[in-house]
Image (tube, rainbow, N blue to C red; front, side, top):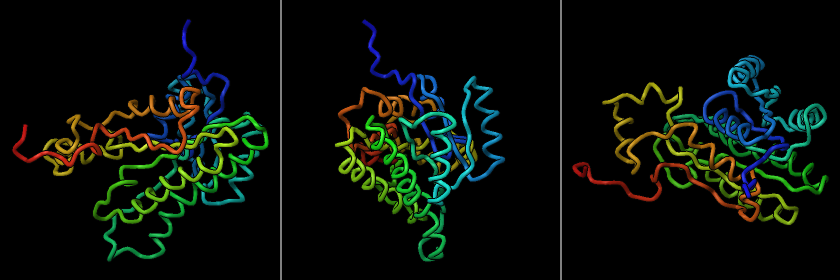
Amino acid sequence: MKSNLFDITGKTALITGATHGLGMAIAEGLSEAGATIVFNDRSAGAVENALKMYAQKGIHAHGYVFDVTDEASVQQNISRIEAEVAPLDILVNNAGIIRRVPMLDMDVEEFRHVIDVDLVGPFIVGRAVARRMIDRDCGGKIINICSMMSELGRSTVAAYAAAKGGLKMLTRNMATEWARFNIQANGIGPGYFATAQTAPIRVDGHPFNDFIVNRTPAGRWGKPEELKGAAIFLASAASDFVNGHILYVDGGILATIGKPANEP
C-alpha cells in the first residue's frame, strides 16, 4: 500500500512573504505535495509579479497585500483568505528582513524594525491563524523560518540574530501552548542557499563564497529546492508528533566547528 504520510492534498497553506527566493521554493514544494498556496507581501507590485511567476510554474496561487506587523491588517486579511480561498491548515512564517550594520553604528529604530518584522510578525500572524485553527477544532501546522543565526552570532547581524534566536523560542512556546489543540509548531533553519540575493557573492574567489564553501561539510551552497522536503515533512501528517523542533537544513554547518585551512 502506498503511504500518504506526506500528502497534503486538500490543505491550504499561507506562506508569508513568498514572492521570491526560499519562500517561493517552499510554496512550490507544498503545492507539489497537494496544497493550495496563499502568500502575501506589503507591495502590490511584488504580489502581482509573484502571481505571474507562480503561474509560469503551473501553480494557481492566491496573493494578498498586507504587512505582517500590522495586526489589524493581518486579522482582516486572514479573514478574507479563509472566506475567499479556504480555512488555513498550514502557516509558514517566512517574511523577514536583515540589516547588516555593526551594532555600534545601528540606530535603535533600525534594530526595532528588524525585530518587529522577523519576530513580532510571526507572533501576530501565528496567533491570528492559531485562533481560527483552535475554533475549528481541526489542528494545524505552523512552520517558522528560523536561521543558523538562531544558534550562532555573526558580525553586523545583531538585530537579525536576536530576532531569529527569539523566533526559535517563540516556536517552542507555540508548541508548548498549542499542542493540546493538535497544532504542531516547528521551525526550519536554512543554511546558505543559492538565490538571486546571494548571486553577487557566490563567485569563485569572493571571500564570503570561499568561506561558506569551506565552512560547509557538503562543500557547496544549498539549492532552494532542497528546502522542499523539510517543509513538506513539517506540514504533513508525517510530523504529527513532532513539536517545538527546529530542523536545520544547512549542509552540516552546525554539526562542526569547521576545518583547518590546509585540510582537503
